[in-house]
Structure formats: structure tokens, C-alpha cells
Image (cartoon, rainbow, N blue to C red; front, side, top):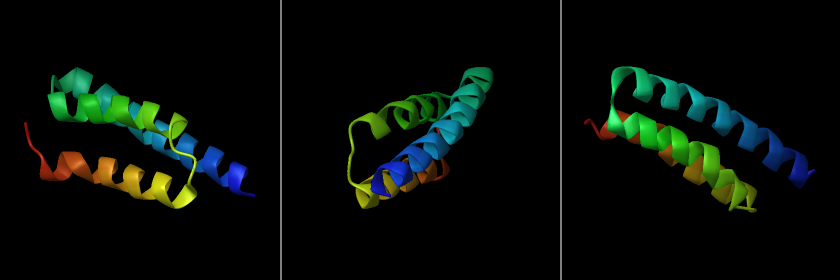
Length: 68
């Protein structure tokens, strides 16, 4: 069950990352662009489900608090 959860959360954060990446590229905004890339990559390196959700939620909220 844990591997399925990791896969689903990884896909969700990857989809959100794709949105951030496309927005950052179109608007030439640095923070959403790099957060989108980070959301693509980080699920490959984290195997704990709680840590995956915590880091993903932090990255998703980051562009709201850091404006470029």
C-alpha cells in the first residue's frame, strides 16, 4: 500500500510541478520555474510517505511566500 501511495503522491506533485513550470516559463518568473523543476525531481529521492507529502506541500506553497 505504501508504494501505491508514493506513486500517487509523486504523480500529483509532478502534475502540479508541470503547471508551475509552464507558468514560470510563460511569465518568465524564476521562482515558479525552479519550484516546478523541483516538484518533478524530488519524489525520486524520498521514500517516506510523510516526508514526501511534507516536502511537496512546502514546495507547492513556496511561490506564494517568495515573490520574484
